[in-house]
Length: 249
Image (tube, rainbow, N blue to C red; front, side, top):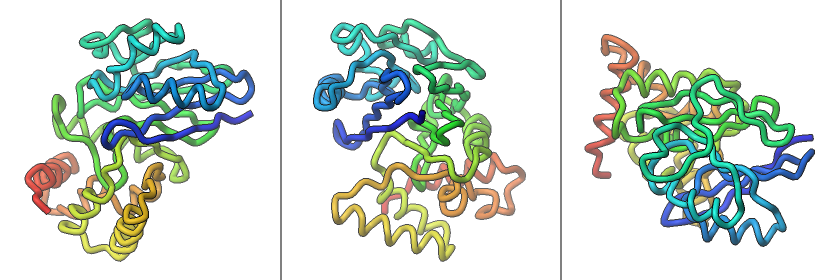
């Protein structure tokens, strides 16, 4: 039986994700941006939390760990860096496997935004939870890692099947689209940006996305094509990332 994902907005621009393994009824939260909001969503659905999966240590991703564990007794798993701010029961690294009932999550090293950032890939259901590594039409800032590290992480995600549904943690897509249009004039991007702006005018979410959509329109994944003069793909990515960091549009 498949896993189902319940997505909901929280904080100023985060998304929360509850994943329910239909075979067992077990439920996980991907990150803990807002413990009160997560508990409210669980209560509305009559679900019981058994697992917390963190992608990285930032407070809007692991800040609710302690409160949720106190309220539910859920096991907390994530990269070792999470212990900088929150409790952790199981430290995860690249290549590890986490089971939620019959749902299998493969742990992928996707460092760059933070050094220890990880993502969770459910190959059977073709879904991935990517935290702040990959966004719809964007990617995370390099707070700790290098362009080479982040490019390797993005490339790893881009290698997933095109129909993989990607759950990224923030509603940044409209601002990402404005930047993307400043560096890329591809017809597919223009069409997608128009759809994004229209969706946000209607207060509709633009998350999740897909790997295929990002490969076609995301300037960070398209960096080598947009900066063919660069000495390497990582250098091309670094140029696009630097341009985004200073973008005022």
